[in-house]
Length: 297
Image: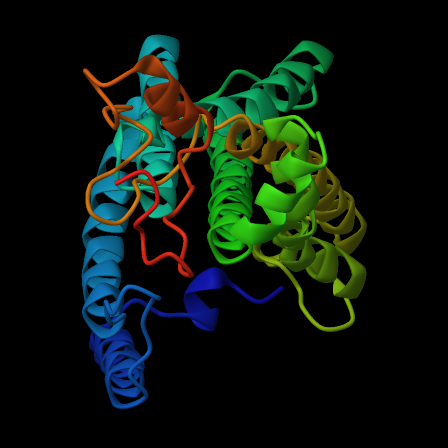
């Protein structure tokens, strides 16, 4: 059986290779001008992410042996994982105070699965088992929430005229947004689906390889990996469905250009509640391009 140390020895060569790979990723992102739709490049983000990953993994490696000794410390660590995931997902979706709603899709997706595993005894209440499994599930919920939320809000921003058309036909706000945002948000499930469909043929995921390196039989490693993939699909499906619902109801949204965010609902303040109510009901709504924003002014 191949030992983990033989597969990837921790030495100076590993450090040099990691630094070279990170530098290559940063250079490619800079040369290709990879970035988001708001003009922010990803080169710096890649560099920061790589350095943070190294520091955080070093800290976790030092603390993990201490954390798993007591259940209260174990639960505090799990709560910390969840809090960081919510903050990361929420701020990736929106820059206003509604980012806190990211706790709903991640929590509602992960908590029932973890509770089921603990109640059935498939995962014991021990750090060496609970932390990795919970981390995988929270990470899957984070990814699905970010992708689903961003795609849904981007689609509503781009196709706001179609949403207005649905409202003109008598559809409720939620239903009009769902009709536009649902197909785009559903694409967040594709990475997990493709990974599950091609497992063993294209990729050998970490749980499978890790158990093999730990001395488990290929059958046991395959069973554990199958469980992880199926559990991830369940978590991601729930996360996407809930983040889509939050976007459709206007609870999770972005501020409009010029500071007219629906989070504040201040437009028309002092000049009638109808305009403010409309702003709260459709926080993503933009000024008409054809009228150059002159309506109601």
